[in-house]
Image (cartoon, rainbow, N blue to C red):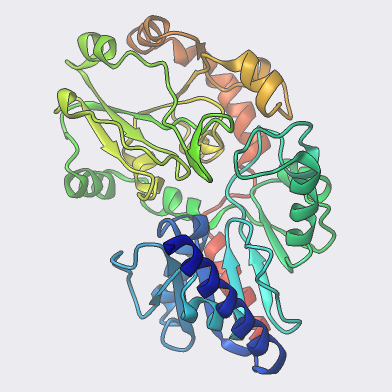
Length: 392
């Protein structure tokens, strides 16, 4: 019964949205921001908005942030909007600017006078968009329908932010995108230039309750398309033996575990108090990069952001053949170009950490940074804000 009521309510709001679409006026002073389909306050939209706050522009524009959980505190004067609420539909029909890092639902029709700045959410290792040759996502009916919906979505974009020339080339093809690409680096990475110093890092550690006397390892795996609980809710997939890591590393190290925003479950790490510090899908990862002395990931785009800090990375790729051949596929030879050692089991991973074998990859990391970080300079947010002002 409740599901039927929700469907009817959504239908009525879509009718109202289309009435506003036809007869309402676009307001260039209204900006609507959304990160990760409203699941958290994070990523490129967050840092673009915070640059507006820094300049006092959140008082000159009416800024709205879409959130599933509106209890989230926001800086500045932004107004929180519950996703799929009546106000949500009203604002998308009236806003002069949409700023998002993921695809919008296709039922949100964009006005001609509205400017859609698509921030995207990472440099791709994994194939995406029209380059996919198979589909495992529970939320998609078929590969052909996924691609049709993708094209419908990308046609709305007016500007697309890219971290590097490698991404720009892929985005053109994989998104069937022919409008302007802003190859300026990612706004979310500005903080890695601005706060990469001892004082700021120590302050972040104290605020997050992280130990000051241990080396911090950030474990940030991606999600697996074929391991899910329901629509857009994926499992926390790992074969890490946390007992083993605790026994070998807890004297000198502490482990930060950061779930991907699409991961719906929260593993219980209470048995590892003082060693494992978990952060949920709703927490922005940017500050965790800064405090981490070492990153462990798999195929996540976090590698392209963390490399800005020129710190070591290890890749826990226990399922690389299955992932590469049966789930997504890669754009480059990951085994050859990875800027750090690859481990396939927990013992091998611990051995690499304790022996510091990752130091042998300094040349690989330098090459990786030249290819993927050439546009990041700490000023991407400012460039997007200037674009918004010029188009207002």
